[in-house]
Image 1: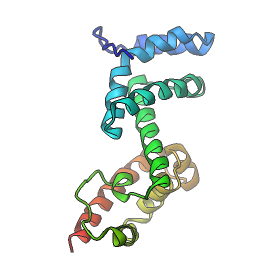
Image 2: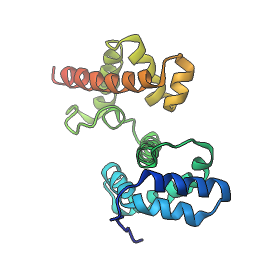
Image 3: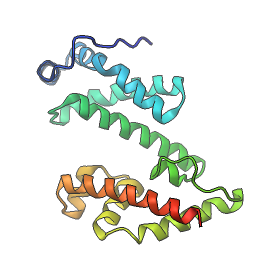
Amino acid sequence: MKFIKNTSGNNQKEDADLITEYKSTGDLNALGTLYNKYMHLVFGVCLNYFKDEEQSKDAVMQIFEELVKKLKIHEVQNFKSWLHVLTRNHCLMALRKSAKQNIVSIEDTFVENSEFVHLDIDNTRETQLTIMEKCMETLTEEQRKSVDLFYLKEKCYKEVADITGYDMLKVKSYIQNGKRNLKICIEKNSSE
């Protein structure tokens, strides 16, 4: 697999033209040209989440396959930003799927912190879940609902907005602030 970095700059008009061409003709060459401009960034995000080069390369291909379907149904204003969110969500879903097969990892889901709780292996998971439940109760109602739907029920931003009736920008804010507040609370309670 070869990653080519685009040196001609990120031109949103050019991206929009390629998206329009792909949507109207279904031409995978147009989509490939567009994706190739950002493939190195997609790989970097995947590598950041998976910490494994081969798994990240596989994810880059899987994300392209997702793109073939999703780009036809979504209105995209800024392709680079939209692709970043798509990539991040793909990685999180893959991590959640593997976590469900192994062990539920609270720090992977809510907190990017490797120094979470250092207890006996048998008690760690139960302790983490207890701490998380206690910390969820400290969030505002809006943050708690949004975080629960987004992380635990695996809903996308739009679904959270539809279910709660909150504005999309508010949903993103509630999730971001809720995650930050959870991290602070979990770190505080795990050190006690």
